[in-house]
Image (cartoon, rainbow, N blue to C red):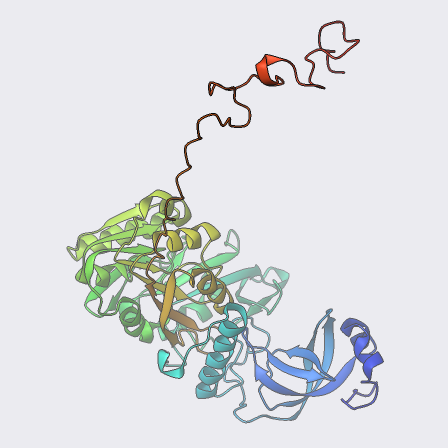
Length: 475
């Protein structure tokens, strides 16, 4: 079947009224030009007005694509042939790109990736959160595009014919294992460990998932413990602080941008008390403790919380670490008008209860760290009544992927004044000889159903005729 090209035929009013899925059902392949990159790293083109999303595409690409999914308002497709490349397209440096699900954008020049991701995230913040901000309120920070990643998650599967174990990443959109011989986004020590791991694992009893992390000095640790593979504690220095953690803990991944991230989050503000929610091993808590008299870290993971206590103690910094889920702690733990709150939630963003209580308690300054622009847009829109967005920083902590870290700095708005209505006019006293409705001449209340002098009102006899002098019980 020859690919369908966009044309003016069949695009009249009757054609436009037909459901998109029905129009796409007639097509297998088509040609289109990619207009832009969207959040998630896919290219967006339009066929006769219908949005078509294509992975591994670049703005300006002229493509022949095959439809793989048809939805009520859009379609998804895969590249069959690159008819003409867009500006900034390149040959991916990694041999596994396209099958491995780890990277999305290796086919784009490094500087172009950053520009396109910033545009995509800004568009998501406007579309979902209704956020509009001048360019001077946005800062973009990028670093080394290769050899940056401190942590990774590897998967294992038995090799064919019982020949040991394969190690790699899941294929894009599936649980199929793609064994790797290279992974150039990892720091060198981590890449060496990853590509040689398969031949050092036992043939049986290997976990399906391995968390691998690197520290300073080329040290590597793997969790869970398997045989004689490296295992245990790591340390990474960021500025004046040395952080201890292990492979089970969350720790920000871009080795070269950790100082810039900490600086943009903590800033220059000072005060009495700061709260670091979802605080992990204390990446932000330690520098906050230099600027605030007291720091409270709230972290639900027991292992990370234990390291946070240790990291604060080893630097002789005052602070309290609370091992509790943030959504549980915040109900009674966060006071009104706290000087500073930092939140670094998971990709799903802030739970509804946390958003509501932040708006209610209204800390003076709120810093939001996010790796998911749609969740951030939703949360900032919900917080807009209580906070003013002062500044955004986009940090490319995940080169070669579609992800971008965003730091949002917010300041509390003044609480609306409570308006107390003026007292109403006082009721005039009843004039002598004038009776109020329902009262007798001496001012006492008349019994219900009684007329003047206590006689029953017409139609209000306490016992209706034929009732035998008592009320009929209800049916």
